[in-house]
Length: 132
Image (cartoon, rainbow, N blue to C red):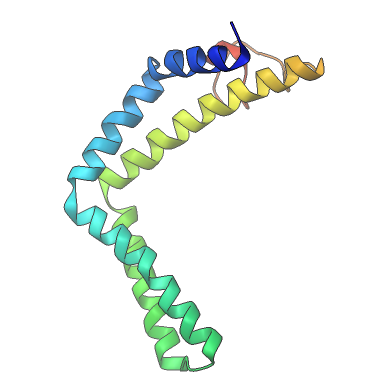
């Protein structure tokens, strides 16, 4: 088996984890929530316009204050969205799993110990092979 075949097999195994399944469910729910999708898109669109005005020197203090208010309101709407928070949490959990695997692979290839060792409890763990 080549290293690429092993990587594909690892990816297939990762897809079977609860973290991957939770992420897929959270993404599906997020994509179906038209309100939060529109809110996040609006939030993302705020910055280019702001940066363009700021770079051109045409941004007034009033426009800056209005922008900051829009950002705060949009951030609050996203923060209060259970759908968005569920997706962000699922992404973090999956990314933590992938990072722990990367840490193990890196430590193995360099001959290092896995950072922090394993206390047997995963709470507060920075990553180890036991999480898989």
